[in-house]
Length: 296
Image (tube, rainbow, N blue to C red; front, side, top):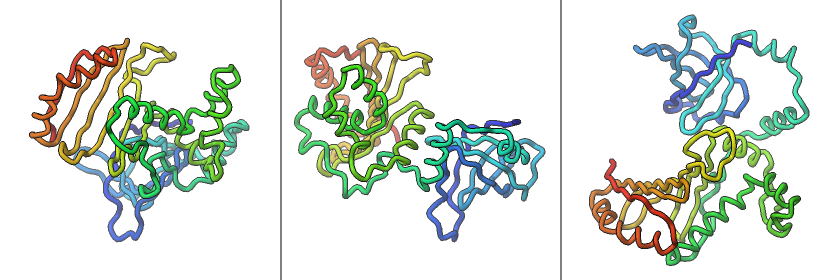
């Protein structure tokens, strides 16, 4: 099939007066997009449902034409594959799905919305901890929240079979709870595999929400314990305002970059750098550098 990738499509606001909150696109599914027009740089405005995407299209297309697109997902920028008009019929006639492929296709079709782990009513989320007074315990609770999220359930089963993980711990993961949503979890696992990053969002202390993103800094073909990775923490604190902290780790060495939206917070954080370094030293962690900058 002649398929062309369209990376980094931009999404605009939903069409006004549509009466909808936005079309939920399913990863791997085909959509018909209507070309509204082209801007001065040649980017096409393509409407799918009640959303409009700005994307590069070949010069052979004109306004008012309909294009066939396969949604590949993407965060924060969606990506599509552009298919020729005949691709849909050719695929249907000559492609045979494996049993695994059929199962994934069925799950994708059954789920109308691919909700991430963070797509939970905040009122229903219990805080991980009752207070912020124990940093070591906070780190452990965050690790447990991600480890027990169900994203890595299959690898945990393999660990159990090798005697590396007890059954009582395995049973605490979402796959063994009542009301488990298989379609939602599979979608999240596919999203994690595609984007090569994992995101957790929730309440860490009472009234304090956190967004935590973990990803490798390089795309390697093999797992490497020394592969550099980063954690990004985003939270809004009562006195310091919005902060974005990036913690990079490689070969046991750490670097911290903090972004603050408030000038006064930047000054306070810079004054606290010696305390941060002291805390890392107490944990026998090699902190190479700490930087603070103002953004906004």
